[in-house]
Amino acid sequence: KFASGADDGTVRVWDWERAIEERVLAGHGWDVKALDWHSKYGLIASGSKDNQVKLWDPRKRACLATLYGHKHTVMKVSWNPVNDYWLLTASRDQTLKLYDIRVLKNAETFKGHNREVTACAWHPVSPNLFVSGGYDGTVNHCVATSPQEPIHSHQAHEQAICDMEYHPTGHVLATASNDH
Image (cartoon, rainbow, N blue to C red):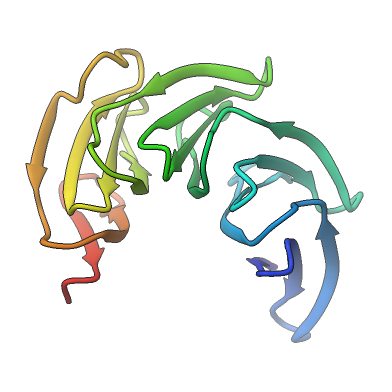
């Protein structure tokens, strides 16, 4: 199975083997910009241009919760690969939000970007470490339990970072940008 987000505000679940659409999850008021399927639980997180993050149960075709923490488009959502309850979201409001889904509220707000936050990724081994990428090409390295300032920041690209991902062992970070 895989999921896709659309400009019509829907999340669609597909069966890869049979090449068919299985479910449509409707509820966002604008374009769905980001999705992440939880690795252990049957949950999909979606972020939208409507500034909302939604948690879905695709089997029941139901929205379980809506998180209203951001003031602008949610560009990325990412489940923590080690701590099953943490969801990280990146937004054009220049912040990242860390949600603990056990209590369904905003746990922490991370600042440190001077422009929109366009990407984020969890470290695959160290559950408290993550990186974020900005519209201006900066990469911030952060600790989830310390939201004051990034522990390290550097200019990685000349333009917006579109996506980022760690190698499975965590020793290399790859970033993609509009600067080619």
